[in-house]
Image 1: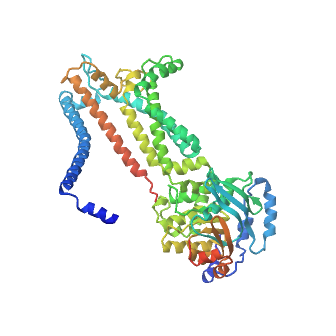
Image 2: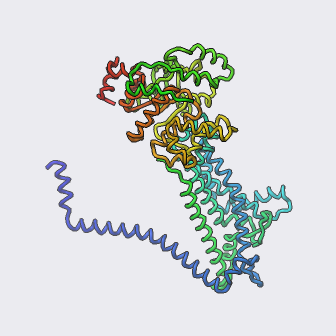
Image 3: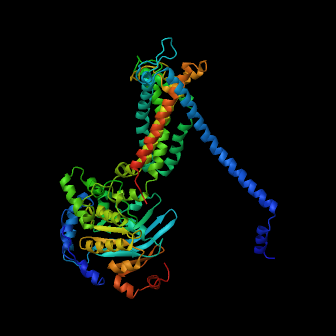
Length: 312
Length: 306
């Protein structure tokens, strides 16, 4: 019997028991994989359901109109007010400050890495930038409180110890690698022949980078911006440590403020009894946070689709 | 610029020996920029001496060797390039024709490991002279790539891109004129005149490639290089571009890399056959097709390999 015949006979003369075992094994693997998918899907559904039910019961006690229009947020005081605006304002300051730091620096780094840097430099600098992403946010929080704030206070002595400026700068630093790394991926993916065509027309590196490569990779760059901004909105540790816990309807970054995330931490850490109105506030705030990031993601996808250029 | 059409003759009989029509003198004696600013006079004198000469030499490649990190890719290339000719570079894949083409506008400079020895002259200038302004060189020696690669911007801006690089404060009307003229030269104007603000990427492949030709023409090059410009196009678009090249020949010197031997025979006046980094043979297309000097050329032209 030669080799091919041997192989063939082995394949076809498999005992029935073995065939059955194989089928069971396949079914087990299928179920295990499906189970893993279901765990994450069901978790998401569970979180959303609990958010919705608790938020619903919150709005049975506090009218939606008051929640949206009242300018004070004092659920922890005797004189309770449930106006979300101060927390939104606090989050907004952090978001704007962090974007002002991260988007220009991140984009400039991406342009440098994708067009200017020699391969050797790129190989060293890119991972170094990505190390920034691996630093625990609590370390960033300490960095903001114990280094950036004192530094800023040498220039602005009136600034309070807990302030939005320091926190937003550090949140910005934290999301730089997200912007630079994802943008750089998008820019590097721009077909090489486009750069060559630019150079072949006598354009300089800067013109090729800004007028050809950047517009061509714009969808990826915008996606990186939106992801980074979502991250800044959801960032908790830095703002809890450095931005203070004073819900205040202000846009002045030198004051102590409170963001939505920091408020949730404050209440969760305390001994708030289950079922009280204070307990329910964190679900309402969490729901709003969820809706904002969801909206960001949807806008991000729409913008990406709008600006996507098709290359064959 | 008025396009004379000596090309029509060439379509009937592509093998007529090439003579220079007067059409080019205006182009060459006009507002030509010197590669080295301080040698303008020298250039003028040189041009005067070129007048009334037939088949004047435009570029000359002498003893060119080139290396990538992987090893030598071009060996001892010597090739003259004449005014107003269509020169076809032929040969199997990886024989060095594209590399050779990219030496002529120094696009290979972008590759770090690339190294070159020898001399390439454009008129009287050594283009690898350290004093050469790369932007001016690349404007004089335009290039069209293998795959259509319009920039991610409108049709108008695609054509205007290079012009804006040269003159940032150009008037809108003047720019519009140049864009229209370039699109007409690339015989694309009638198809896009009503949608100049539409993205260049919305055009069909053949239109995109003609847009790329218009883009290259807009900066008023003297030499146009095309790297397998029809390889990703259908036969109709290919025919369109071939016709276009025959028309452009009146005003430009054209160098085309092609895998398509029939195409080389249809449109070129001279052919250069590359094999494994060496230039095996070059000469008049008709003569080379009928009586190739080297055995390798004959084998390739007969389709025995490649």
